[in-house]
Length: 475
Ligand code: 6PG
Image (cartoon, rainbow, N blue to C red; front, side):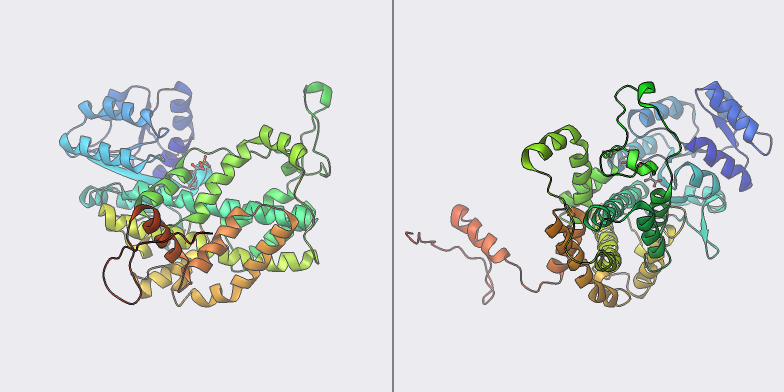
């Protein structure tokens, strides 16, 4: 569907489009929905013959082996100078490998992150292409016509060299994981900690969406909380169906959804690559881990009866909790984006992507899952100082951080007191507290390393590398 929707979108943008798919239904579906005559075929040769040369081909297949097999089938039939764009969520190292392979054959290859889901693909996604600049100019007008647009500017741009497009999409998804987990934790704090009902919580997210937190993910969270449960399944029609768990109203669809979240790997890749590059992304890491914990449903159910249910009401007025969360979420969102942009900066240097953070912020302003008003502020921050080491210290952002870090601390404290896990909120706070700590206790870690392994340390009062004769205190 993503591929068909992008093809229909490209048609609307004025391009001549041909489409191919292995399935007859997909092909005839494209033909029927197309606003103009198109070539739609299951035959690859007919498809390729229909395209003017040099060809521009967008491949939309699931990431992984499917991309390799499509390229293996395509490459021998292409001519020098043809361009193939992989619009899936491919791992950037696969994209690098495929780029070299295509390059050797005189073919151009682009990795392009596409965000916005199926609807976005049809109406205006955010697109993150990366690769050789010259062939990009051939497809730029069509991509710009297809992309979401904010203030007249398209949410697509040539982002950089190599696999930069898929890298930027990977980090987009890492941030997506972080923001989603932060929203889930604020829901939990309000629900179990504050005793709020779904409509009230939906209203809170709706109010946040009118202010500085305005974003797609906050907006859909409000919608989700308000959504009624319309399908009623009688227990005898569905063996094993037990209805909503105890304490839930049963009126809302959300209350019927099993509390396990799957993942396809892009968030994990972000954390893994951040670890490889030595860039702290703790809120993204916590969000990835939270999905793994969520998947341990059976173990959690067993442990809850063995170890006791930890979660209860947070002390104080629920209104104070909601108030703390409003400010706390803002700074936690900022910390999550800051981690993602810091990773992009380091990756761009390490992998020679040549990324411009202002352009990334611009492309993320509309169409994508992490679109938010904050992206405009980030864009301004990077425009004033493209080399700012971390968004949290940008003059456009630092005052908001200072103003809202105590509300974040209050929200985390209330969660701790209530026994509600808040790994993403807590790591956002810890990241902030650590990042602004002039001194951290790593002197002790350095001393321990030297004690047991003679790994040496540096001193604050003299240059050089030191090793001490550590003495057992005899206690
Ligand atoms: C987007 C989304 C999209 C998809 C994710 C979901 O930008 O449109 O990120 O790419 O929804 O792949 O990822 P998980 O299955 O890992 O949650």
